[in-house]
Length: 241
Ligand code: ATP
Image (cartoon, rainbow, N blue to C red; front, side, top):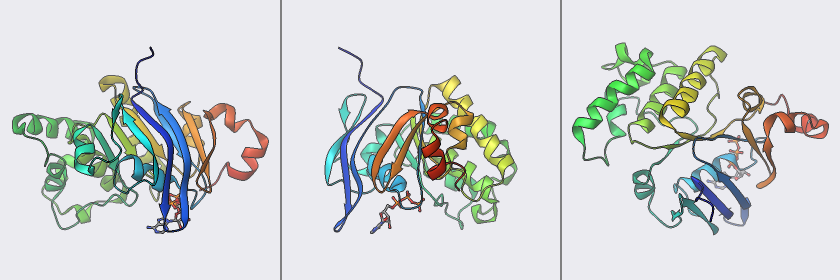
């Protein structure tokens, strides 16, 4: 028998009223993989990610984490199982301080001392946040807010991070820094990533697997570098966003 995947999504369908925003999606992520989901506006990227994280209900299909069924569990139980969503728009609490936002990631944890250690760890990963700890999070730049959102997700002790539109609206240099940190987390801590981006340039850059969505369906799942060589795909998707 093969080992269960870190994440296994089978035949997932998500509906908003009569609209099937995601249709029969099946995908598998192994431990320590960084997999990208790309596709045009409205393709269903956010819907797929949100459904995996249990933030929105699914109409059919299932999600398993290392063989354990997540489908039907509350979003809190899914966080407790080690899955965390960094949502599009980041959902930082602008009126709270940076440290308060980070500590929100620990609300389900009982290990207070370890949580304090993790705070130090997150601040080492994102040193730009350290001098801003007492500032209102709303005062941070977009890039710092993305670091904060990822830091908050790490504070939950998640080992599967699902990040929606990571690069949206951010300066390329900041995006570069954030990806360097994520690749380090994968290498040093064995984290697994599922990341939505409008463009698939980053997936090509880090030589990752890419899942292409179009109008709610997975149309390709393969090595980004191979997909990028496909001229028809290139014409319809490449260089977008
Ligand atoms: P974007 O890049 O614009 O964020 P996306 O690929 O993430 O797009 P989704 O946001 O998942 O796509 O949207 C998929 C489809 O579902 C779109 O047709 C969208 O209009 C629709 N949709 C998304 N959220 C809702 C909602 N809450 N109620 C009804 N329809 C929705």
